[in-house]
Image 1: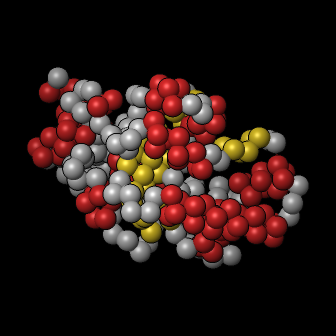
Image 2: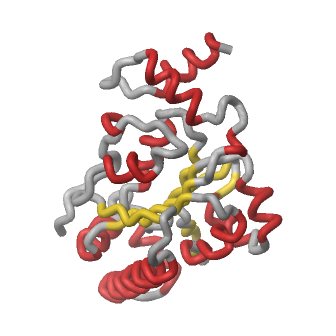
Length: 229
């Protein structure tokens, strides 16, 4: 078992990090000592282009089983919208610990079930919820450039609107989602509002410290793009 854990840790630690005994212990602790289903779930309920990749890798590289865009071989967003009752949610999400990037856009099919957090809260009363957030204008610009503009092109093809209307729709949805989340989780001790670029990752580390041992030095920016036209 010890040899397997060491191999997992060597493969997951970024080149800039040093493998230490404490890191191995943290990986073992975060993995639930082989029983991940006993660890509280962590739902990142912010949109894509709000640090989802950076947070996903931050958790994954420290031993958590993180579903980012994909849930195994299935799209996370499609699995989420297909399971709307408590028992099925528990079954589908049972083997994973962290969930992020609930966006699926292909052809005329666009789903983004970030508003399903009430059923996820009901299914997992001990789960942690993180609203990964950023200034809305920075987010809109970043989303427009996502995959060299391919996401915007696919959204225009899906919606039939132009780029200006697409940006306006995104702004409206983004602001409404933020307000709804902050209202729903008001005074919820298992909720964290994390502002990318403003808050230190220490905020997330401290938020999860009762159940997870995380090293803030593992947090690196991925897929970052300067928010300019």
